[in-house]
Length: 311
Ligand code: ADP
Ligand code: MG
Image (cartoon, rainbow, N blue to C red; front, side, top):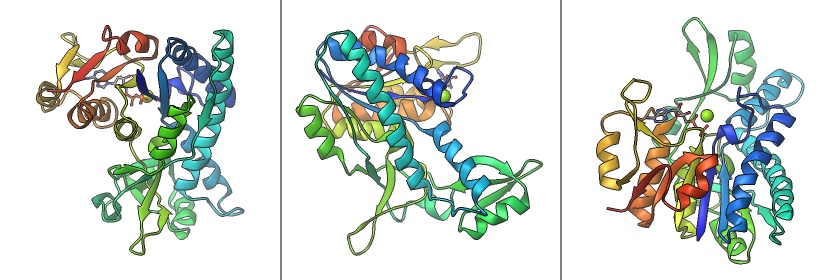
């Protein structure tokens, strides 16, 4: 099978959310053990991943150094984290595959995701990123062109657009590499947000793209047989956080739309995962699964997780 796996934050930082270099290496090594099992079983795998904590660290460096070194744009931070996470995954997977005697190589693509220039998010950026700052510290960055909003009692926080991903521009390269037998790491952090200018040229933009929604796109582009959203819970549940929480097993896309309409899935966590697997089932007519890292092999076989199947 051709499998696309989206790794969540917990696969790249320690349990308490710390993102020191060694925390990331340890978490990624653990995630790669599970991925290597799938590769060893003969599957073709494309990995994508989040980058929230890593970009958060870079933004903090930008902020602390802004008076000395010009801050780099968010799309550059995405590119940097695709590279650092990619190389960490490559080292970990190479090691895990060698132990299993599997002769397969991993390749990471610095990859862009097209968004609409006129996405409503750009006029009204709502996605808060980075730390809360004092008015004075925020002003340095506002002078560099960044948008900030005041959060009552907490200070000033940067806001950026969260546009809808439209196209994985580097999907053809990912498809080729997969076809040539590489394990591919691609579209990390949802891909580098990119717009097409009126003259047809491409340019990076400062925005945050949801990695789960991009995962659904790239999975469709490479005609994956299944999309797996790997997170820190075994399944999505109804009644989350209540004493009548119930895991959702296999449902059709239409059934999942009905459940989602009942507000079980918050926008900042489970919402985009449910949206991603449902879109994949609707548009690519293949199953999408939400589960924990430890269950990805079972989930691929249809024995674990929340599985959304085409209607
Ligand atoms: P990741 O970092 O892996 O992308 P998130 O932390 O954004 O994932 O989202 C996963 C989290 O969503 C779970 O750890 C859980 O706490 C939370 N969550 C919210 N609503 C639900 C739900 N209905 N079912 C399961 N988990 C939920
Ligand atoms: Mg998380």
